[in-house]
Length: 398
Image (tube, rainbow, N blue to C red; front, top):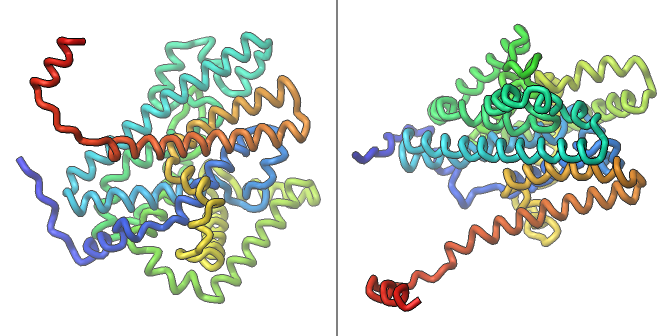
């Protein structure tokens, strides 16, 4: 039985045009690549190189960028598929992607936990088991692994991918609504966010507490990215480019910079509780969203869509890392532990920190380039026409 694509509304036809392949914005890949690099650097403790990342200078950080762009690209890809192939086919493809993300997380979970356990056991650093939250795997392996499969148990730094899995798993009905009534979908997302923060709702974690990235709160940033992809950004273009909004955005970013630096360097004890409240991460504090949007407005002004720098050789590694985001993210998480291990076991000098950081970024880029190249092999393979007789003869002779 053939399932025909749905009859398109005027809004959906606009979405199809907006998400056409020719209109893909390389800035998204560029900044998601930078976010992957920043997440890797931020996950290495006592790493001076991590001071180049945005988390040290404002309320939002690379995680906000990653989630927003993930929502944008998910809508960009699957809205087009739903328009072309129908809602059912688009939903099926979305679920297939969720399965790929889940498998990637489980593989990363296993390799990550084994690596930590190996180092802790063979190098006499048992404190790593508690530091990376894998002690439960030693004490109750079966129960803890079961909770890991349910995404309730997560070692240190393995929080972003489960969040992404949950957001993608529930994205199909939201996307269908957004294709027909984008503003209503965004309003519903805002309502879920407000209610989750008001009532303290979160997903349960093992052995206690809730998720570090509360999906009920972080879904708003993901939805905002999807809304922007499906026409929201175009409609907000005039507002984002206005001089008044730009001045307000710059002022807020400067304010966030002063508060963050003041709190991090202890310049004012009065700023510390303010910083804790404003940058509260688990439930995505409103000021994190405002800070992210302010940065986005500034980027729109400074980096236009047709910026020539996106075509440069210097930008190519970053863009590729953004395009192969899943592989790069997983490799980066594992390498962050390797970097931690090197700094703790061998040397924590500045030159070692720089070497570990640069080496990790180079390896992440190499993985992205390899995956990009390997995906072209099937397309370039010659389609030789070979008769069954010839195959049988060759096989028998060999």
